[in-house]
Image (cartoon, rainbow, N blue to C red):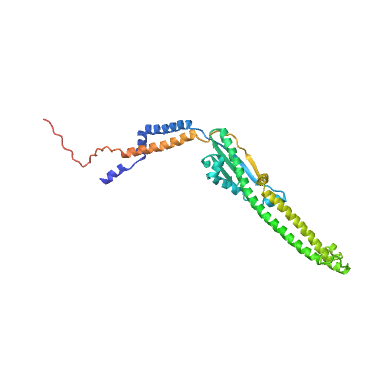
Length: 323
């Protein structure tokens, strides 16, 4: 008896087909209804446009002084990559004038191509373009401010080194003056001594002087005075730059090259909503849910009692004959 009842509990492809056939109208109605409702709602939702700008970053410096000031600058790729993290900060929110900049603005740097992509959303193509231009100006100001901080640190180091050089030259000049006071300017020329000094690499003007020691001290004094003048000139230049932040920003702005590969422009189509895509997704989800509900309802429905089949060994009662 158990072996005969077991095949009745198995589900065949025909059973599945019959379930889908009985619920075909419901499945079709739910699928089309979900698609149509989603499409209608998507058509009345406010549209959002996105404008994008692609940039290439580089720093150029050809002058020796500028090269020293612009040395050890942070990586532009690192600064560009960290700008995206700053979209979550209150400082950048105030600069852009929005409560949540990350929901409207994006800034991504591609290490492989070296392209910095800035994009912004807007309720109209013109608003999206203006927002992207504002983001671009804010990003440029961010890069310049970070580079200016490094330049200020470089200026402080160069100014300290120039002061050390000036102080060292002054100390050397004082020692040279003391030595000159104790060295006679004329002791008489000696050809043999001059030849010996020249053979040792001494300057011929010093070796053939009437007093080589005195001439050597005067030459050292001239070199120290030149070093002192150069150090004082550097001190004056670096001090003037350190007192003028606007000049530093100008120098950084000239060195920082931001080349727009794709300028901010007005987009043709909105990025959201997308009625056809949303309707297709809703149709697929409606189809899945309706099929699942059809099988679930079939499984939970009470089964009808099936008539028992007569056994071949069963003896039927004899019919009574009527006389």
